Length: 261
Image (cartoon, rainbow, N blue to C red; front, top):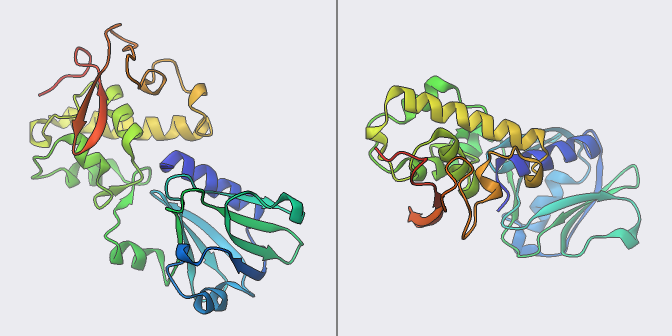
């Protein structure tokens, strides 16, 4: 599933292509991906321009010049593509937006887990769906405060979109690897320095991934993602990584590098 860095790339792409463009028509090829009726969708999208594009966690919010925001979730394999000629319509296109400049935007979803919705505001959507603040935008003080009174494993907390949104499985493993902390470490066993370190590594991993345009091969050599697989080797110790399960998710850990407290 696309995580914060990948979705940020989608946001940047949309901002560079469809921002301030007027939608003259929409074509819904797969109605199952819409969280609203087709007439409602068309009413609030057609004839409007996209005036701002914002990301919160793994979600994109497109402000229209009308009353609504378009909410985009990419599911497991979603993407979108801006193009002009009909023969270039991507495979697995589910929704098409036609613009007044002759170009189109295709919402692509191969495995159909993505969806589109409408909302009155970003804040309303977050409230209705219990969606936490964006991981990259959360302040250090807010992050540390959100850990108060919790006893769950730190990895489970990082994956909880209700407390902080955008971090998925590979990112949580990477953040804790960079923090030298075992994913099973209970939150109430963390020191204040540990909490600060985790926050700093959240920012570091997000910023590196975005700077490298989510191209994993270009990440620094000390990143876990290069060896995050069965038989993978820890960059720092040379020992084999172990695969365990934390909060129901497959988790890679270097037991000599990452301290369990």
